[in-house]
Each structure stands twice: as C-alpha cells, then as structure tokens.
Length: 108
Image (cartoon, rainbow, N blue to C red; front, side):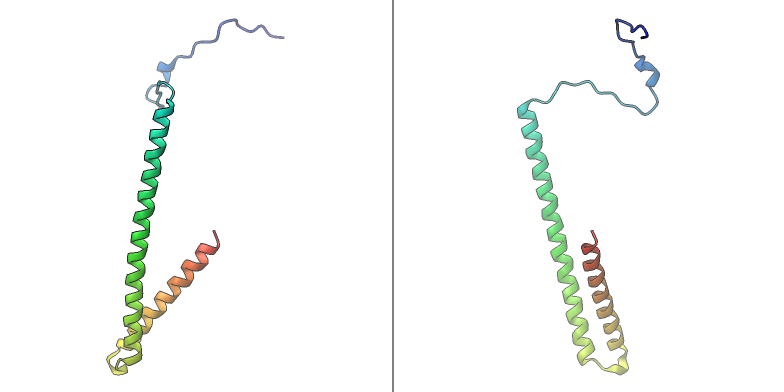
C-alpha cells in the first residue's frame, strides 16, 4: 500500500484566476433567511403565473374576435370583393394554429 501523506495537499487557487471560475466563501443560510428566500421565490413564481394568465386571456380574446369577425365576413360578405377569401384564410390559420397547439400540448 502506498504511503499517504498525513497532511492534506495544498491547492493553489491563484492558478485558477482568469479561467472563468468563481469562488464564494459564505456562511450557511439560517432558517429565517431560507424561509424568507422561499417566500420571495414563491411570490415571484405566483407573479409570473399571473402575468402568463393575463397574456393568455388577452391573446385568446384577440383570436376569438378575429375568428368571429372573419366568420361574419365569410358568411355575409360579397364574394366579388375578395374579403371572403381572406376571411377564410384567417379562419384556416386560426384553426390550424389551434390544432397545432393542442397536439403540441398532448405530446409533452
């Protein structure tokens, strides 16, 4: 069996300077600090979820309005104006995006 040194080897941390390595020496988190950090992170997550919900509702409202207006134009519009064809293209795009969204959600 090889002889083991009784004292641990010293590591030259100065040799690592400039190699995109960061060292931080700090004390362990106290229970109060950990609870405070967790409460703050939970509040930030709740805020992000609220923002995502507001954005989703806004986008869905805009898509619904576009779908309804396009349906109305397609049903009552004058075929000679060309608006009915454009309205059908919008409806097709909305339906295709909805199907893609639903199938994408199901594959995760």
